[in-house]
Every structure is written in C-alpha cells, then in structure tokens.
Image (cartoon, rainbow, N blue to C red; front, side):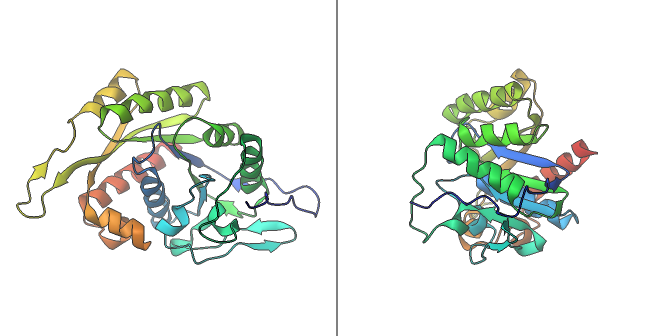
Length: 267
C-alpha cells in the first residue's frame, strides 16, 4: 500500500495557475468516462490550449496509459511534484506514477484520498494551464466531491451509455452537479450505436434517444453521441487515442464537437 505523497517542505505552495477546469464523471462504471476525458484533453491541446490531465481515480488510474504516457515519470523540484509532459504537450498526473508497481493496490480510506487530491491539484507544479481535465471514478463519492470543492466553478460533463441502469445513475450524477454548483456542460452518450464493418449500416445495440430524453427531463444540454468503434478500444489499450489515430471517424468528430462546445462555454 503506497504512502500518501508528502507535503512540500519549502513553505506554502504557490496557487495553481489554472484558468479553467473540467470534471469528467459518471454515475456508473464502465461507460467509457476515461476515454472521453483523454480525448477531450487531447482535443483541447490540438486546439493550441495548455492542458493538464489529472486522474483522480485513485484505485484504478488508467488515463496515463490511455494517453500513451504511462512510461513517463513524476519528478520533484523544490519539494513539489512536477507532472510529466506527454503527447501534444499535455501535462499528466496520476496515482499510477506513484505506485511501486503496476499491480500494487491503493488501500486508502476517504479522508486520505481527499488530502491526496488536494495535493495533486494545489501543490503539484502544473505551471500555467488553460485547462485542467480531471478524470474521476464513477459515482458521487470522495473523488468528485473533492474536485468540486477544491475547484469551485469547474465545468462538468456526465458520461453515460444508453442502457437504462446507466441512465438511472446518470440522474444522480446530474443531481450531484446541481448540488455542488458544478457548471454542467451537458450529457454525453457513449457507445451509441455501431456501424457494421461488413455492410456499413448503423446497428442500434441499445435504446435510441434515451440519453437525449433524460437530458431534456433534467434540463441539461445533450452534447454528443459517441458511437461504438473498435478503434476506440484498441486505441485506448495501446495508448493511441482515436482522435489522432482516426481523425475522420465518427467518434473523433463527436469528440471534436464536445471540445468546441467546451471552448464556446468558456468564452
């Protein structure tokens, strides 16, 4: 079990120069939230923004791997953790960098997780960022709560799939955003349909329009449908996101549309 990162020894840390932040979260696990967070961070960077990607999924940190940055290493300068810089100059911070090996579990209770997240946001040396994208574990517990309290006014995106059980939990995530005054950019429906690789026709694997209906009911914008695409899976596993590997795909276009909405909302 790893120890929590030590606090800096060289006086009070300087406040982070983070102009905008985005919390990517979900009510249920397995909806592709990390894929969305990684591709949004990459999309912002490709628009010329200075971007950081913070993975606060303490127990299952995968964002660095999916960005192709898991071979990097955190350094320490004047007592402060310095996030490494990966593809498209994205600064990346993840518990994966702080573990003794890839199989080591993190066995911490909530208060310790909250303190570590505070350190990674406020005490790590992020430099100056236009955007800090935060990949949160599913649910409305310690991790997204810590982010919402530490970064008041953060933007938020809720990720769901069209399944009824995922939409049930998406309701809770939207209510969480309203309660914590997260500026909810909207709802993203991931795994929305499949283009048949043989005939090219769209196959609806789940109910059509359910997430959009939920967005209307809860008075939040519906941002985008991201289709199922085997290249999304292989890209995440290999650390080569679809946004750059297959930029003309429907999934990549959906991610770019989300980035455009995010930039518009921040102006």
